[in-house]
View 1 (tube, helix red, strand yellow):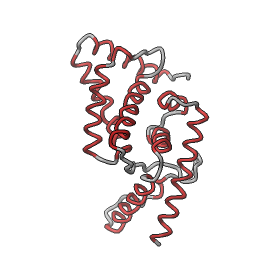
View 2: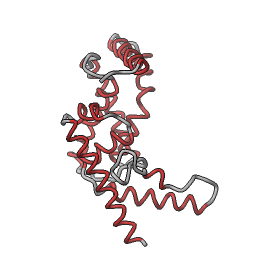
View 3: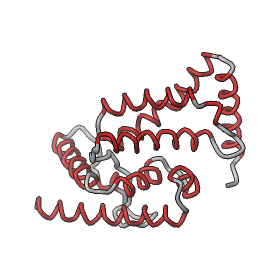
Length: 206
């Protein structure tokens, strides 16, 4: 995958941070955590649907990152892909231990299954001072979570990485350790199933 100059600069910067962390530079570690914490927490929250679980998992993930810094190989891929892989593996372990099937907090998934189809976020009412708009937004968010709870973990994680984390198919394939064709299939199936579930839920409500 060809990187842009900006992506290469970011990759080089994280490569330097990793080397500094390994050498015991605590300021470099703080900078690394600060730069990645929000994204890793968001991934954990979208998978678990629990703020408490997400916070605990985020801390565990960064502890694992610290212990495994020497395994990062800049020649094999970006730091973002590496840390997301670690996060995903811990989330899978978390699912296996707890057998949780909670809804994710996705607001940007295409309902039609197409890359350029209308997204869930676009269906939300405009955020404004009106109480009715606020209530409608909360109701739709709850409906989306209800539908997402019914997706299998395999489809859910593929959709989250593509539509929420904006990762390309190659990066997702590396993280999930599956072919790119399988990634595309899971994303398409996940979007389609989510759309059907939303239609059924909304049909029961109306």
